[in-house]
Length: 141
Ligand code: CMP
Image 1 (tube, rainbow, N blue to C red):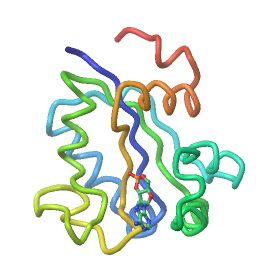
Image 2 (cartoon, rainbow, N blue to C red):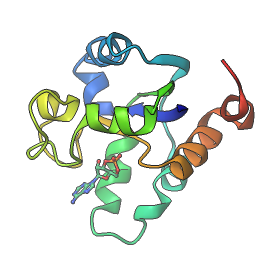
Image 3 (cartoon, rainbow, N blue to C red):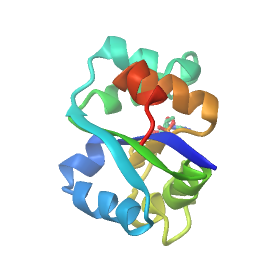
């Protein structure tokens, strides 16, 4: 089934000039990037983005990290894109992510884990609508 998912290349990866290498992996896999932009999040939007983690002990560190520099936001479309992209990025903790995955190959330590991708259709819808609006979520390509 054709799906859309949301991906964010985080400030650590942007600073280390890994944007091209990361995008290349998604293109090599045959996935389509159907929307993309580079932004620096303010605190308010960052807290909305990560609202499910509010109250956790790492929340403050996470918000400081995600607002520390520019990030690249993308909507990626393809067959089973949500689970395919999650497999490609690997486990949340880059010290545990398998080699061959994006976090496994490039990540150092939490919260700096290079990339985020939606973990379900519900979060893909929420994240795509938050950053790109309803039209991109509802669009057909
Ligand atoms: P992400 O997939 O974007 O979802 C939530 C983010 O919180 C995660 O990637 C990490 O950047 C960060 N995170 C998750 N767990 C921890 C943790 N235990 N300590 C620090 N940061 C974390």
